[in-house]
Length: 330
Image 1 (cartoon, rainbow, N blue to C red):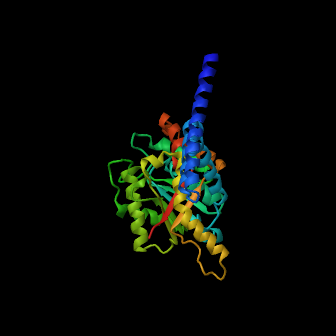
Image 2 (image 1 turned 30 degrees about the vertical axis):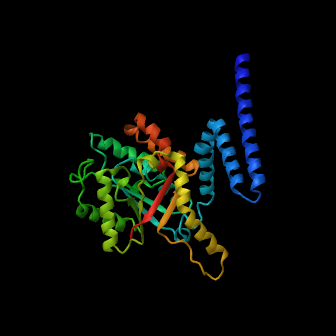
Image 3 (image 1 turned 135 degrees about the horizontal axis):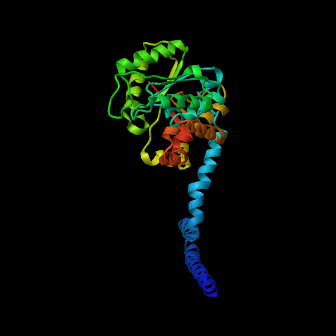
């Protein structure tokens, strides 16, 4: 034990001696270049580098946990700011239709959208799942599990539907026909008086063919403007695999990407006479609070047939359990 202490003190003393030598060199440099900031910057950089090297574990904790958690809290505090959610949602009670491919998509990918729009902005939510996930013969069970998930997400049972159509079965290698999807979507838009639609983007988060087919159908429906009931339509942004499984670490990227919108929102508040308009409605950021996150986990717990070992990792590591970035379909 004494030898270990001696080794530790010796290592600390040697590092301090090195710093003292560096300081002396830099002081000389400062004397010779009194008005130069270069030496000061160099000294600061060396200090930071040395501190980082001698406190590696603490640096990793700050970088990977402390700062992401602070960003997470900051974004939750600003969640109603118009930089993240347009005024449109704060002034009107919309009726949302979420269109997905399989039971469990609603909680694995879209839970921040369903939870935040419902709890904070009083949006009426409806869910249309275009198949029962019968790829391995569990369709009937998965349809029942979906109703448990809808209860956890506070979606009314009468507006929580999974279809079982022979020409639209769960298969990652089959592209569903847009001509068959669009009439189904229109039917439920009319039935539930929908004015706001959300679904996948072109990549479909995981690249699943069924997800991508739905995205294509929704985009065609919106762009052709054949259904005048739709006032707003958004798609869930896909990201790289690294970001997808970065959990709270992804808040670094999200925060940086929304800085221009935050500044825009700030200046639109402080500058009078509407000289600067509010941020546009092209993007929406929705962040699950801890309570919403736990509700999303409870919703997925209803999908017992899908609760494999890898799903335990997904519920912690996936950014989609915490963040949804929605892009307006133009």
